[in-house]
Structures are given as C-alpha cells and as structure tokens.
Image 1 (cartoon, rainbow, N blue to C red):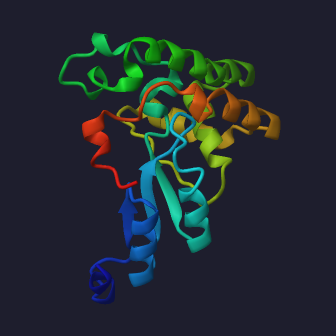
Image 2: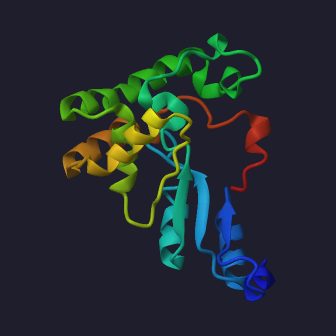
Length: 190
C-alpha cells in the first residue's frame, strides 16, 4: 500500500475496523490518515483505547453508523418486524428486551432534541462533532431531507452538561446487547 502512495496512485492510506496492534503496525510502515469504524453515542467501544491511540498518532476517525443504525433517531422497530433479509432482523440490539432497554436509553437523545428544537439525528451528530475536530462522521444518507437534517447538526451547540448527560444516558452499560452477532464480530479486528 505504501508503494501505491509513492507511485502517486493514491494520496492517503486509511484503515477500517482495525484494532490497536493493526493500527500501530500499519502506521509504522506508512502514516495512516484515517480509521473508519463504528462510533456513536450508541457504540462507544473506541473510547478507552482506540481514540487515544489515534490522537497519539495523529490519525483521524471517520465513524460510520453515527446515528446508531437508526436507534438514535427513533425511527426503528423491533427485530421481528423486519424481513429476514434485513440485517436488523438478526441484530442483537434490536431483539426482545434489548430493544426495549435501548429505546429507553436513546430517549435522552429525543428529549434533548425536543428541548433544543433539533432532530434526534442532529443531536447524535452534534455529539460526535463536539468530540473533536479529528472526528468526521459519515452518516448514511439516501434522501435529500436526511442530508439537510444531517448538515443541520453543525449548527447545534451542546453544553458540557448536555454532553455529559448524553454520555451518561448512553454509556456502554446502558446499551443492551452485543454490537453484532458472534459471526459478524469474528470479522472485526479487536
């Protein structure tokens, strides 16, 4: 990959879903510009070790699923209401008691959105944007109205108290169920 940069075929190198050792090894060979991984109020697994490592090495974070796969917007339904072809049908966080617990946890986002005259999606994205200039979320957007809503997050200001409240409401202990099925987790470098 480093040769591709030297040859001018690519400008920068990035990684996706990489763990600590992979990031360090890759960065030692050639500077890594960005890591793409799931990170949001809903999925905070990067906070203890990966984000500090990225900051130590000067690597940006490009979080996918910044709206918590829809949970943070409130536009989801239980797993059994999705067709078997939809990934949410098997998502552990959408099943049974996990779904109910996660809807309760995510209610903090909806409540704050109502108080601030914003949408829940804007609050979720604003939370990420307030985490630092080295974090640039990439929300999946398939409608113009969603794009406009997402861009509106830039104008949402969150106080330290509001950030702390969101952090507490959606702390890892308050999000029920594993991130993926066991089979899917086997594909993630941790």
